[in-house]
Length: 133
Image 1: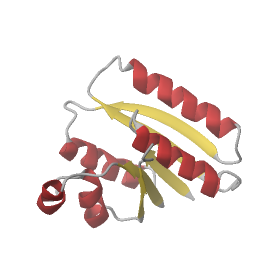
Image 2: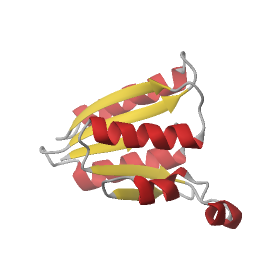
Image 3: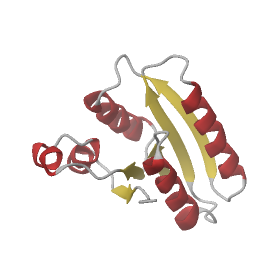
């Protein structure tokens, strides 16, 4: 099974990664593509996080490929389109996405990437809430 893990350097990304390890960490048939979308060609934080995700993957049964993909502009529409494009290009079976709580008005307006992905992505999307630490 191919899993797409779009990650941010944030608590929501850490929670989603923990979920992947706990649920799929011993499954050798899983291939995880961890991807960070950025508009910064020198996004050091994303590169460091990608390296840490690769390191975690080596400690578990599943294969991990970490990618930092540059977008012309980092906004919700471009990130959503990038996730859908990667899902189709890589023949993804499942998207695992960390998310943070948003305001009632954001949810009503449908501005969250997560909400739009649930409707537009052609594969199941697992939303993992951020830890409330």
